[in-house]
Image (cartoon, rainbow, N blue to C red):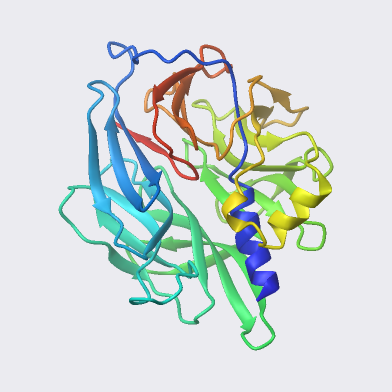
Length: 333
């Protein structure tokens, strides 16, 4: 159980990367459009939300029932449905451990989640869903117990073909998948389970021909990669400074799971053709997850302090919506 809690803590911890100088002003609605999907995190409330960037309207699509848990989500490229890693309530007065299955939800604000892949073991977890640009594949990470009595487990990056239900394993210990806009490449984070160090990987969409773009010794941790519109850059959130040893190990051991997002990070980018990572923001934030606008000209990112917009070079960071939203973000037309 300790190893599984450590891994679940690490999943949360790796969502803690980001920052820049912001100005809390309304969005420039004449140039920025589309819908942002995010998970609202409030005391005693969790909800899947849609934000209209042009009008500023916010709509709740799914209110998470009491004692249920929505860990991650990703909107389809056309914005018609949402992939969710979701743990329904285990029952009244029962403990919610976050053991999740993979669901689909119509983005009409009236539907209930539909089960896509059900967990087959009690201590099983699906997380980090991501769509292919053509909407035909869903990528995700899958924690599965090897021996429930010994609390040993394996983590695999997988994808499922929605038309057939065929599941393909792609990489061991792979998390945070994202597919390039042209559908040619897959980026993900590989975790070394002994050292818990993270490296950024580029591969073919079937997991083959992998290249390490950012090795494990560059950052304390990194997460949340996504591609530029032309596919020439990979953006990611990273923690460059080591936290105090007490806080670090308390978080990793699950002693303070609720504080697992307390490592602020900044946005970085690295050339897909290989090269040195470069920081693009100066201020660090907690729980960052980024998404590119449909026209490729603007980046949105979610944090525990709100939703932000910035230019692809990291400039002109400004607050868009002051609501706690981290770990997931999608921008659709």
